Length: 101
Image (cartoon, rainbow, N blue to C red; front, top):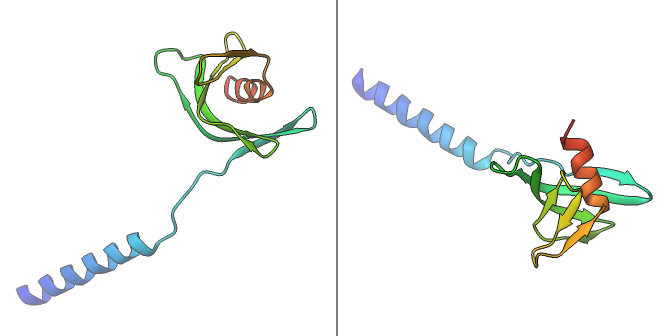
């Protein structure tokens, strides 16, 4: 009886392992909006814990991929990795309008 229970346990463990390996991987779809004839897609986004008005995001504007950068919703600026501040950026408008509701 104990051997049968052990075999059933091993079989269920194997089935579970295979289902985890072979199952579909869930991925979040990009958040895309069209603003002023520009397609803006937010591919990855995180919110700053310390500065709640600031987001770090990977964005694609008109099929041009931007690396991870900061988007300040308080001043409505796009802050590039080199530290340059770009005011009234279209991606900043999309991120701040969608996520600060």
